[in-house]
Length: 355
Ligand SMILES: *[C@@H]1O[C@H](CO)[C@@H](O)[C@H](O)[C@H]1NC(C)=O
Ligand SMILES: *[C@@H]1O[C@H](CO)[C@@H](O)[C@H](O)[C@H]1NC(C)=O
Ligand SMILES: *[C@@H]1O[C@H](CO)[C@@H](O)[C@H](O)[C@H]1NC(C)=O
Ligand SMILES: *[C@@H]1O[C@H](CO)[C@@H](O)[C@H](O)[C@H]1NC(C)=O
Ligand SMILES: *[C@@H]1O[C@H](CO)[C@@H](O)[C@H](O)[C@H]1NC(C)=O
Ligand SMILES: *[C@@H]1O[C@H](CO)[C@@H](O)[C@H](O)[C@H]1NC(C)=O
Ligand SMILES: *[C@@H]1O[C@H](CO)[C@@H](O)[C@H](O)[C@H]1NC(C)=O
Ligand SMILES: *[C@@H]1O[C@H](CO)[C@@H](O)[C@H](O)[C@H]1NC(C)=O
Ligand SMILES: *[C@@H]1O[C@H](CO)[C@@H](O)[C@H](O)[C@H]1NC(C)=O
Image (cartoon, rainbow, N blue to C red; front, side):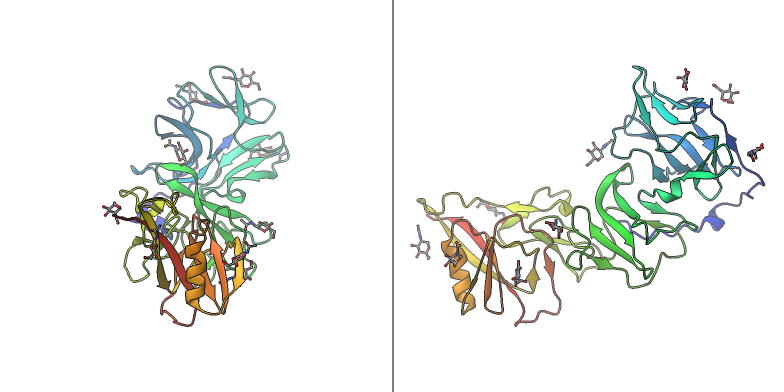
């Protein structure tokens, strides 16, 4: 089952806890450990900053306290492995938050100047103050994969959310969201440039009236691009994410169909005995245009043949007399519905064994 990206938390209907006045102030010298005194709570007890269980160890972050299902809204050092139960989170006397291992190694939990105090607020924001009680660091300014109701992605800062691998693994996943100047949220696959070619834009402006939680399936059914991994595309007709391999390809992991597809056989011996290749023409499909050779050719058959005769060519796109030859993997494969016969044509080389 795929979970939707826009997770609307009707917090008020779930929680009847009245927010208490005042703050829970944490001072330097305070210590947390994974097993005893593992977190600092917000005044109402709604949110906690501290250790939560992940895999065989613990991670530091902000999470909803007091509900059985672990819901993490911010994670420190998300791409580091979980730590053991023997670590200490030390709000040191010189005002830094450091994780200290049993062996004595230290890791900063967040980078800020020496602090005078810190506070877990009932909004879900963990705020660090200097000695003049001015905020110098806020978890809201460093979102990981979740936006809470009062939190905004700042257009100027180019703050991005990056999806998590899964609900139980908060490591950086495959997608990121960017709040644009116009208030729209755009989604891009991690590792691509923020250009039209890769982007997906929400149809409604801004962050919805609830949490924006970027999970690793992206949003809507078939967006953003790259949802189905390499050499595969998403069927836009379905009610759920349905990944389809390009002709001649099979799922790398049948149990996780969003992890992409690979050739069912290789093209290494394309001139050798017993093996031959054929070309499959597909309409309406496009992919990331990374051609290694581009030539002007008269007909689609010329493009088909140019790829077929070229041992390096694995696939080709033909558009308006331009034939672009490409190698694998084919990334960000996308099907355009309705199919326009005059649009780009795709050719895919399919190796087969001859008897
Ligand atoms: C937890 O912290 C409180 C306040 O800092 C302290 O009084 C208490 O002894 C601690 N409990 C344990 C088990 O360390
Ligand atoms: C979380 O996912 C990352 C990236 O896929 C992986 O390297 C890491 O081992 C995972 N962590 C756990 C606890 O499974
Ligand atoms: C916390 O850090 C301080 C240095 O600021 C150190 O003196 C103290 O021993 C540390 N506490 C623990 C429990 O590691
Ligand atoms: C900072 O806030 C704390 C608690 O609210 C208060 O006791 C302290 O006097 C304040 N310090 C300054 C410099 O305003
Ligand atoms: C991103 O853009 C830069 C400059 O335009 C370019 O050099 C780079 O190859 C691009 N990267 C990707 C992944 O497209
Ligand atoms: C992959 O190739 C093998 C052998 O050529 C064939 O039996 C099998 O049906 C192919 N799998 C798919 C999904 O096409
Ligand atoms: C591959 O197939 C084509 C078309 O069927 C044929 O003309 C060619 O001789 C074959 N090549 C080999 C090496 O079998
Ligand atoms: C692919 O990119 C090249 C420039 O790198 C461009 O000239 C060509 O028209 C593009 N092909 C398609 C089908 O978009
Ligand atoms: C590019 O491909 C065309 C068609 O296959 C071929 O005629 C041309 O020599 C190739 N150019 C280069 C630089 O390899």
